[in-house]
Every structure is written in C-alpha cells, then in structure tokens.
Image 1 (cartoon, helix red, strand yellow):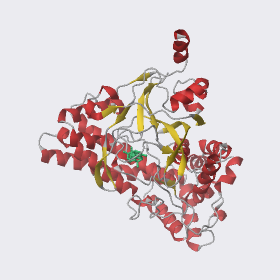
Image 2 (tube, rainbow, N blue to C red):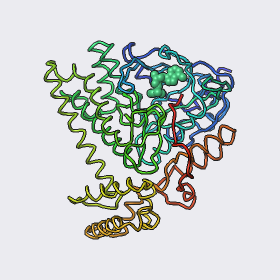
Image 3 (cartoon, helix red, strand yellow):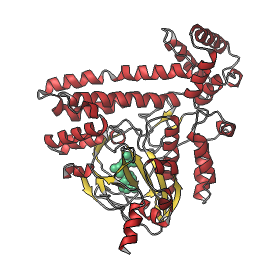
Image 4 (cartoon, rainbow, N blue to C red):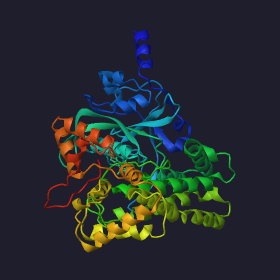
Length: 492
Ligand code: AMP
Ligand code: MG
C-alpha cells in the first residue's frame, strides 16, 4: 500500500517549491483548503498541464479532481493564504486571499516557476464576511477570458482547471459551487507591497522587494539602486500590459491595486469584458457607476495604481523622504511615454505599418474618432481592414472614411515593405475573434445545464485568434439588438 502510494504521487508530476512560505510570517497564514462534498472535473487545460510537467491522465482521474478541489493535498505543497491590502475604487482596505489558497510553486521541466492557486477553496483568516467559495459561472468565465487573453498573446494568469464541488453556494440564489486552479508567474500584487508598507517592518518590506526582484527581475538583483529600478521595471511592464489591453479592447473592470500584479500579468477576471463598438467611455461592470475603470481610463488608473506602489516603496528608495519622493515621481512620469510608445507601435502594426511617420498619430486618431462617431465595432473594423473589405465597415461610403482610406493606402505605399507583408502584419495584430459577450454568455448557460461542448468550441476558436479560419467566421458576428446594455458582475 505504502509503495503504491509513493508511486502514485511520483507519477503526478507535482514538483513544488514553497519560496513564498519562506517569507516572514506576516505575509501569509498557513491554511488548508476546506474539502468539498463531491469534486468533479468540469474543464481541464491539457496543454497547460503538460507544459507544467503534470501528468495529464492522473489529473483527469478521480484522484486528480480531489487535488484540484483541495480535498487532497499533493506531495510537496504547503498551502497558505496570502496577506495583502489594496485600494478598492480608491479606498484603502486590508484584504488577503479570502477564498483562495496557494498550494505552492510548481517548478516545470523547463525550470520555470508558477504559482498554483485554488480559487474558491473555502474560508481563510482573510475572508471577512465571505463564505470563501466561488460559483461555477464566474470561474468558467475566468477560465474562458484568461485563456482567450493567452491566445491573444497578452500576459495573463492562466486557468488549469475548474472542478465543480457538488455543493451549492448562496448568492442571490443558490448556485453550483466550483474551484478554479489558477496558474500565475506569482500572485504578488501592488497591494502586497501596500500591506507590507502599512503593517510590516521596513526589514520585511525590503525582504518582500528582494523576493519580488529575485522572482521577476533577477537581472537587477545585484544593483545598488535596485528598488528604484524595480519600480521602473514594474512601471514598464504595466505600461506594456495596459497598452496591449487597449489594442484589443479589453476592459478589466476592477483595476483595484490588489488586482494589479508585480509580474505584469493580467489578473482577477471578474467583471471584465471586451468592447464592441468603439467608445472610450465603455464600462460593463455593474458596480463601476462613475466609470473609474472605463476603457479609456485604464492607462490613467494604471499610473494611479503604480503611484501607490511607489509610495509603498519610498523607504527603500532613499533614506531622505523628500529625495525618495522626487525619485519616485520621476519614474512615474515615464509611464505615459512607455504607454504611448507601446500603444503607437501596436496601432501601427494593426494598420500594417512598419516604419514611423509623424502623421501616424493623427491617422490613427482620425480612424478612432470616426469609429466612435459612427458606433463602429472595434474588432471588426480592424478585421475588415485586414481582409481588405472596407465595404463591411459601417463607415463605408462616408466622405471622411473614403478620404481616410486613401490617406492610409498612400501611407502604406510609401513604406518599403511589400503589400503582402503589410497584410501579414495586420493579420498577426488584429484578432479575427475575441470573446464576445453574447458568445461567452451562451457558453456559460450551456455549461450551467451540463453541456460543455459550446464552451469547448469557443475555447478552441479563441486559442488562435489570429488564424482567420473558417470556423471563426460565425464568432465574428455581433449580438442582435438588446433592450439593455450588457452588464458584468464581480465574480463571486
Ligand atoms: P476580488 O473582487 O475578487 O478582487 O476580491 C476582493 C477581495 O474579496 C479579496 O480579498 C477576496 O479574497 C475577497 N473575496 C471575494 N469573494 C470572496 C468570498 N466569497 N469569500 C471570501 N472572500 C472573498
Ligand atoms: Mg482580487
């Protein structure tokens, strides 16, 4: 029996290290997941499992479901709930993993390190009033959108699996419970640093910063002014990330500082959604009444959040506080330029432009303005330009669009690269499909009724959004007219 057990475990592929658990105690609480009644695998990401070095068939077995539900702790794991704070809609609060545990860090066969977290795994000391659980719909939604983001080439946490728990959870009505296995470069957040700055000692703050640097920015770990460089690196990665969001029309929906990573990965898929018609004021989240996290405001919020990181790091930047503030402000002021250059580069690629010209900015801006004025669909406009089907664009026939097309074509003709390579660049930069809200809803509804095939197909189509394949065609159609605007809710 003992032998079979060891053999079984070694065959699972789990290869945990627990570096986070070696940080000072103030940063976490050891916490096992609370077992659930009857775990059943609902969706499972086989390619991701394989790339993590995990045994796909053992994970698919009953035993695997028990692990992914938190009923069985895999060998080498050291489950814990992380402490963090954060500004939620501008208000500072103590938070922490209220319904998640970190099992540990999986070291892959390629020697990469990924956090393995169970989300919806039961109460922790940070649960406040919550039940520590998650409903199936929101966990499947996170699975779909995070994998779509991965397909789009945008840094993101990923989803390994969703298991149903066999238990019901009380929300506005009773809903099936579920647990998502989230895979992340780490779960270090801006809010982790805010927590350290507020409740930790300066030494603990330094340990956290050194830890984050070692994990995500090892190339600067021996630099004398590494904390300032660290701030700069996070600013750069977030500027790059948010530019990528803007380029595909992704709206995070709840960019609280606890939902912003140090690694530069998109995290926490709650009320997020993709924009249909182009409008910077677009908001989907039912709780974002003032549009704090509107599409067009995401870069502003990005730098606002990074300012909170900078504040937390101040004691490490310089012993003289005034000088520390000057250094931090100087770095923060670079965000706009980092963002702008990433965004411009991306927009040029979307229009098939290789080189840079002065008038590119107005060329892009004029197109966006027209799109806004005429309620043009963001994704499909670029898709139609890519396919050289301007007649499919709602703007077609207007004098301003005709003039714009001519300007764009002359601009493309002026560059050295061939028309073919310009088109190829556009195909690689403009997704043919995005997870459109009505398609996501349709997949979730079917899954709620036990039919996962709709979701599987959607995931397949979204896994390579730049394919421009036959199967993708039906996913490009817009939702029919609806009496109410689409609304999303915080994934609870
Ligand atoms: P989120 O809106 O998902 O970023 O979560 C914000 C905070 O609320 C985090 O500290 C979560 O851990 C916590 N939280 C969310 N849902 C629950 C729940 N059902 N039970 C306990 N804590 C929760
Ligand atoms: Mg969160």
